[in-house]
Image 1: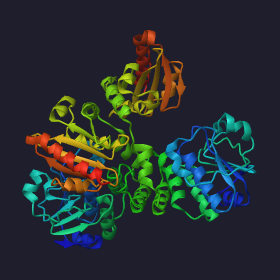
Image 2 (image 1 turned 180 degrees about the vertical axis):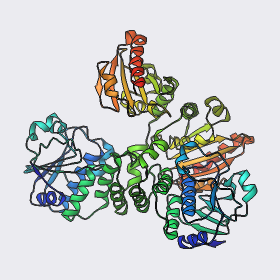
Image 3 (image 1 turned 180 degrees about the horizontal axis):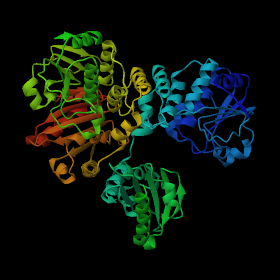
Length: 319
Length: 319
């Protein structure tokens, strides 16, 4: 494995042709913004190139590929963007390109170094690294490329909200604005829009709010009846799961979501030093330190909910 | 009325002493960030100065004045920051300082030019103008000043989300990050944390949701009864005002807020091409293109609400 800097990555790309750019499965704004910005840069350099994603790409990102040709070609050089591990290519893409990635450009320090060459650096978004490569390639910054790169910066930072933002992130975003990035529309699509059914569900869920342990734990319950009444469904529950932790003073937010079979999915969101994965681990689940999950059996919900609260109480007492 | 630029405003301030800085009533991150950044700059220049606000300042902004002395002095020079109209001083402050503002620094192009001198420029936040003045004053940028200015930039743009952001906004924010602004904690407090009373208010307000004009206009009403039931108050209404526009397909979000005297404050939030200031202007109010306000007389609420809706309908038909 060869470690490259931006200039070397740019030189490598310009020395190749028929370049296939891979995104990770379940694609987000950063992997897609990286891929389409690089694609547009390669096309403008006269290369034949394309983007491949194992999963369907949500239509809200359609501006990234607007006006681009869908080229048919035999890939000769494989590039992966924003992909820490080959497993994240998704099964269908990994089956074809596993072990064959020539160049990886990535910002995850957990990168498994699966590619033949790697441009890896710690920053808020892989799009920051793509911008560095594009500058080395001498790419003209078009509004379309600015849209792609801005999307990665914005979506990987919660719109410049989180601790991963650096002064460089803000400066690159400023350059994208100067280049004509359609940033307000992008942010509106990525962050602002809520469906009426989601708002109705939120209203119903808020009524279920219970507070425990001196206000340090907040618990909400989503029932199948609430889905029916609001017209919402499970796909809209991600936002709800982050709600209870947002309450002032709360260290651990718990969301119980009733399944159609009457069992409950538990989603925990914590602030440091509470470890969500540890708590869920004690109940047969798992996840990350700040976000984890487990299951409750609906038959004995009261008992199981009490067991969950007991585990949480113990963790709170050990802070 | 004398129009000043940043250098002239700086020179004026440095030529004075015993400077009182006024914020607008119902204070937000921009008026407070502007006031406390300027206060810290003036104190570091050896001046006697203080900040005055008609309303109680929410404790979440306490980092702005941490470590500052509360000076007793007879004000000799009155500065207003982020205040478009003397009425926005709040009754108690306007009673004393109405007609007596020496210098106003503001970014609202609807400024009524009530001050003896005015540094007015169009930008996302008054904090951008304060930063220009501080540079002219030769102020050393401390982490504390960076916290104040970052807060104004962030809160007046929905954390760099809205169309009022410019490349300059991002560049100034980058400078604040380099100066050590505690940006992630600030963003967590300003955007992530919700009080229980706010959540209860949101739940009650969501029940009042009305949709008009084929789903392009959403209207919510906050009543005094809702404040009583939720334990919330006017200081928590900013988030609510941005709620109706978030609904998918909505171009104009309207929030009606009942005052204790039974009149209603109207907050409009629009997406382009709808001009919120134009709509509010037709009803005796004003503001910005994307966010503006006006008043409704509670006596004839039904009639006045219809008048507002009629104006909105006309604007929607003219898109």
